[in-house]
Image (tube, rainbow, N blue to C red):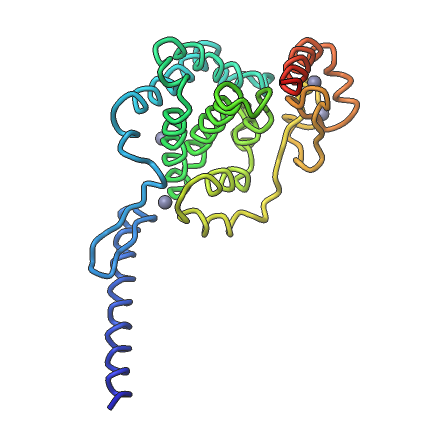
Length: 274
Ligand SMILES: [Zn+2]
Ligand SMILES: [Zn+2]
Ligand SMILES: [Zn+2]
Ligand SMILES: [Zn+2]
């Protein structure tokens, strides 16, 4: 008797599962690959940590303005077409977006809680782009999120001395060759670590064996587009704000890097004294 009832239960469960799979298939056809069909037939769509403040109010306005200012600078400088500016283009666009929003959005820049919300907006959007296979859009969001994350650490929490630009550049590369855009392993790992859900777990399994790539900041680096395996790069030990593929490249770049290096080294010394 007991066994029969269990068999009935198992049959019911199998039927529910088949309907579930059918429902999921339909959702996938609609492009909602991350949507889940719940037991009762309702659909659950994860926002990967974005709250209501991502969709209206000051945080939403700031996120929109920051992105617009970033692209305004990129188009002004025609950076999308410049092959030689490897790291500089990205950093100058981020700094321009920062400068352009710092007064109007002082309320944001001075409040780590609000900045965390802005960061979560970029993270949520980027995670969704990854699920849809839109890696270039995900890269934009990753760059914005990491820039805000480091700004919060430097200016508000005082847990970091200077901007670690290689950490931003490794998520996206603005060079002429569209195939050189930062590896997908680094990109997926960045979002997966920061979103509160498990939506990227499966994707991460797919990409975790891809070699992580870094860059050499010497504009005359002999490696094409200075695109180097990350494990083979080294930081400038004084400023930790640039990476190189070799001692030769570090030496060759020193004349250009010296001023920036000294400025950063002074900030680090001040940070460590406090
Ligand atoms: Zn999610
Ligand atoms: Zn987008
Ligand atoms: Zn090099
Ligand atoms: Zn340096």
